[in-house]
Image (cartoon, rainbow, N blue to C red; front, side, top):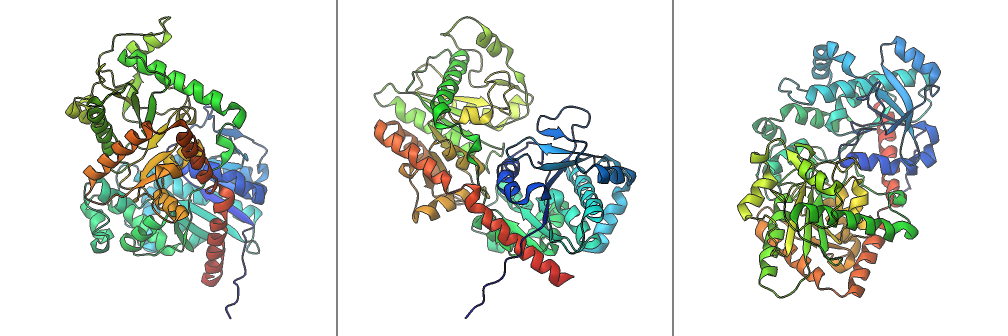
Length: 557
């Protein structure tokens, strides 16, 4: 009879990420939504460490508290650490230490030499953001080392969780210099897997045949791959966020994951039932107002608003498939009778400038409805590299310019929706709630926060079988999930681009014709599905990882 393994819980948790108090992408959502659930258990024994980009400027995500850890802060300053202590301005208000990593550039060569001598981390081919990330990673580890020596001891179970290759150097430093701390390394997407997919090479069918290190040199990401590979090997617990990426790690990093930490969500971000309809109505009014000012066309209340969003990885995120699908739907609807329109939004931050002056002038004007289009009526903001932008290139190729007769209109929003974009002036979630349907046809998607966020706001979505979230949705249902279940999971492979575009166009067309009762049921099912992904359900996987790391650290010592 097998004996049940005793759970070992941490007494103290440090968590380091480039996205602590620094909103960049999905990792920010992982950390900021999980913080409350974890903080309720750990209280102020949970500390996040992030880069201090703001310094003397006000960071809206950070509330400085100089009295927090005051005695240690004075010691840290004498040790040359430039830090600020305070709270992350998110639900739970967890403790945060922001560190200025710039002073460590002076030691960069020695830091890299030590990393090679101690852990065979090859930084010779480093370029771009490698130095910046590594100096932060090293600085974060020095902060933890100093804090540990001042407040803690080997009698306590201490965890250091490092997210992505950007924090790997610090995890390795702590393994050597503070071996009592148990380290967890979490990759949210492997550097080499993302690069293979992004460079147009087939990833999944040939995954077994790729040599990660060889490919990293071929694709010029050798330094990032090296730190990721070595941290995965030396960490006390190596984790990722989905089963699809776990397979990738085993093949490309030569290290099977010790645990899969699926990404959850917190309902705090969703308006309550009293305000939900009000916020949704306001979002739609703003969307239609902007669309009219841009295109000169009017949009009835029953216009189907369909959107895609996320990081601007044109192929990996399936942005190319989305635009193609909307173009196919445009031609299909042109040959059919009917008046209902589709308004498609591509909300991905590009190399954009300010909001278009001609558009903002219209939005500020007293005219409620315009009947003439602006030049380039598909774009809300200036683009620095207009002629080489992928979305604009695809729209030119399809001659997709929002002609009045088109029942499908498309708008490219190439900026962060932070409430201050100059056009919508609404935060992303306050725009998301206005959608009728969301589409995320990813080719490379380790998890997929955007579809999870969508269903949390009761917006049904379409995603693919290559996304971690899509795989999870199928697993919850026990078979292929369809739009009536709140999520439609389209089968995607290395080679079926056209079939995926057709399937998405067909799903949107079908959704347009559903009776209101079935639409309401799909929206309800989306919300119910999101409840299964709340952090209160997924946090147990973290405690399993904590136990693995602590047991392995004790063996190592």
